Length: 210
Image 1 (cartoon, helix red, strand yellow):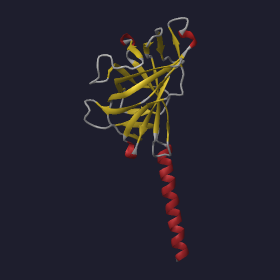
Image 2 (tube, one colour; image 1 turned 135 degrees about the vertical axis):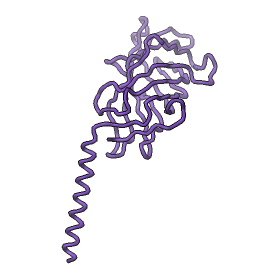
Image 3 (cartoon, one colour; image 1 turned 180 degrees about the horizontal axis):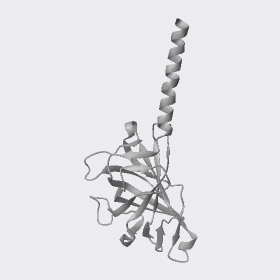
Image 4 (tube, helix red, strand yellow; image 1 turned 120 degrees about the vertical axis):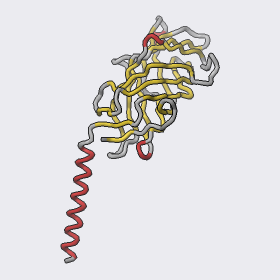
């Protein structure tokens, strides 16, 4: 009888494990609780040719849908960028960064995620269409931007229960500069972490696997 009971328990455990595994394997999409988002970098830093320009900025955007397919495709946009609320008219240190507003909206695409399923720890996103005019203090002005060929990358940091805890720029990615002879020999790297909330800042954002 004891042997039979052990056999039943083992079989039951195997069935549950298979069911969980099938559920995770079949999960092809991500789901977010809020579509409208605000990202506040405090600050974001652009480093190039030995110069560092740091600016607090606010990114306003949205996901196309609350359901995000786990495929390398555009899932949202950044539609507005401005100096962080509460900063001075010239909040940058080390120079200036001017957003070329006519290039908005910028495209946000899903790249992949990290973690042990079903838990998600990080979601990797790419950003294309960015166009900036950067002027280090005492140096020449260059243009910096991201394209499909040279995108910028960031990682959404996900905590317990799928709660989004922030966004970190990937400082390992180099983005070519343009706008002049000297600029063509340089590349820039973005670094910094920002907070992520919904609009109008009423709720945190949660992401789950479905």
